[in-house]
Amino acid sequence: FVFIAGCNGRTAQEHFEAGVDAFRAGDTLGAERSFQRAVRADPAHADAHYNLGICLSNPKDRAKAIGHFRRAVELRPSKLEAHVALAQSLQRADSAEAGINALKRALLIFPENPGLYFNLGYIYFHRAQGDSAIWAYRRSLEADPKNADAWYNLAYSMTGPERRRESIACLRKAVALDPGKLEAHYLLGMRLLDEPSRTRKETGEALASIRMYVEAGLADQVKMQRIEEKLARAGVKL
Image (cartoon, rainbow, N blue to C red; front, side, top):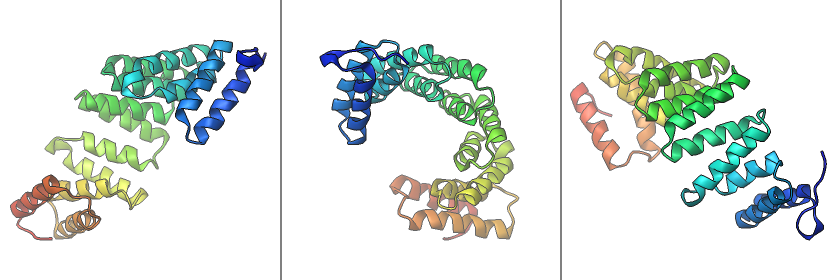
């Protein structure tokens, strides 16, 4: 690696390291300035572009962040986190199709990476492309079957009654892998109460899951109303 001299005679790498130190100390603005000096001193410093993008990841500067993430990917296609950051930033900038394309390009380099499929599933779901989201989450789980978040998101994507039993199985996997994942307990309980063929044991399972969520204080007024309506339709009480 050739160190290129920049502002005040410091090398790009020295500016980069100063930025890392500032970021770790909680000084995001100072980190941003150091990373800017690093990329001015060495426009081919992929890590500085990536870190500068992280510092600029706010609604006001998102377009700039996207530019730096793109540059990081161009300079170092093997930098996985830059691909993910680019796709996520594009999705947040209402450029979901561009985010999907960014992830697909990354998958050409990392064809079995579970995180790329996970992010792809997230974007597909938020574009109301449920079947594509389900496919992506399943591919993610093929590579990483112990990811509770992926099991939960897969279940969440299964919205129709024809997939309810499958979604319940996915939610059971999610809470088995992460018993503290209370949103999964909530959804498991609600889906079980929706299931006409549930057994008495499953009714107890549903009530226990919902009770855990409520007792944790996570149920706001809207969710409490949904829970009460669901319990009334099912003819049961907490």
